[in-house]
Length: 213
Image (cartoon, rainbow, N blue to C red; front, side):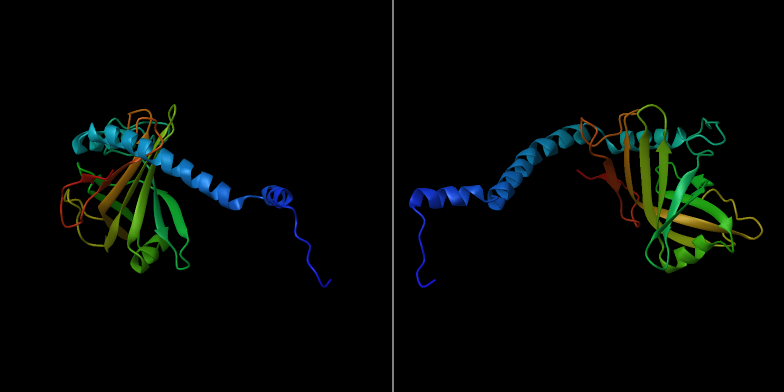
């Protein structure tokens, strides 16, 4: 107990190498992530750079237009195509329900929804106006589109098309600030391999969309 025994140099090294080498594993992981990053970014830039914003918006409209309603697909992209409206409840959990937008702007910067005045979604929007609309194209390899924006409520006003809410109805106006989507069917992808969604952003005070790489 009074003295310590030193391992021979070669046995000491052997003892070290037998231990799990966490530092080496971490370094290897870092190298792999770093090495794969530039090639992935390069692939994404090459695809996004070849598509203009109007082309991306057209593909987004096609994705919306492919969502059926009662087993029927409305040929108009701004027709009857159900979406999931996502709001946040008082505990911060997402609440999703199916709803059919009544009006959609050509550039997808504005959506108008309608609901009854006593629904819970209105209470959640009052508490937190940040909402999302999610579409899913279930054909073939499928596709999806998520529209994010700020919602305002109006029981007596009209939408951009001039249509007003009916009796006991409330308009939900959504000013869209971000669009994300992926579709193998209409080639809506942020990279050539289909792992990265496209992202469009805009300031709510401006009408121009910008693609984010």
